[in-house]
Amino acid sequence: MKWNKQESDSFEDRRGMSGGKKAILGGGAIGIIVLLLNMFGGETGQTIGNIIEQTQGTQTQTEETQTRELSAEEKELGDFAESCFVYNTKTWTSIFDENNMAFEEPGMVLFDDGVETACGSASSASGPFYCPADKKVYMDLRFFEELKSRFGAQGGDFAIAYVIAHEIGHHIQKLMGTSDKVRQLQSGRSEAEANKLSVCLELQADFYAGVWAHYNKDLLEEGDIEEALSAANAVGDDAIQSKMQGHVNQESFTHGSSKQRIEWFKKGYNSGDIKQGDTFSALLD
Image (cartoon, rainbow, N blue to C red; front, side, top):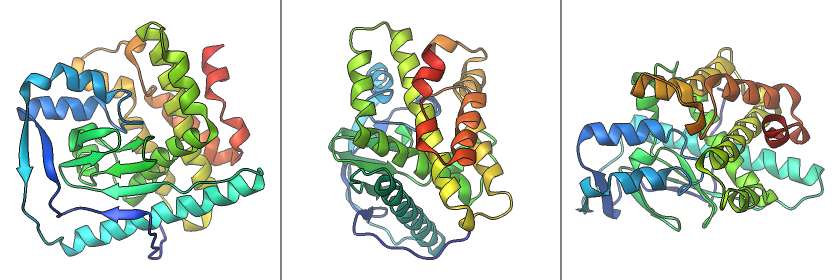
């Protein structure tokens, strides 16, 4: 991806900083399972909560008191993440202006291991997520090492750009009232029905990520879209369940299948039209 350093007052890099208490999931295997089941955490508390409850007996709290100097590679990766964040906010400001809507800029926080948010404490095992309470995207960039090594994703910088755009897609849903409406609809419904609504929400965030890419074709290099599609394929519910459980249970999907995630990203990328992102009508009729 072609990029130039962009800066934003709404971007925070807390990596290497003392963060107070952080949640540590007992046993490496449990931590990996939580990570696998929560790839692209969506809005924290939606899918993270139930799994954390199941593993609370193995959680401990430790004090994080040390700081460390970021490597040159980490600093460059942080600059890239910040630049992607700015490219997203600029694009969505323009899209909202075109549709006579007011855009509220989100925030973004990079962290190591654990972080305190307005939605509560979270560890790296939750994956990247958006907190609607403070309207910030939270991300441990080491997530992408797992995405490549454990899931076989192609890797590359545009995989990171895709995930950032997906999480900011959840911010767009918050501004449009979509996510709040979904939470209301999920209340009192069966787990299977609530999961279907969650899938629609996540696929729409993939669609919005594709819309962002459509508006930034001048930044794309050969192979970038393939990197995004590879990441989307790797984190489909069916791909994760097959790897972790050896079988697939569609009723427990919360983010959508690999095929669905790819299709909705591509629809956003090819159309660039936010009005074509009604995943709810398409999937629930």
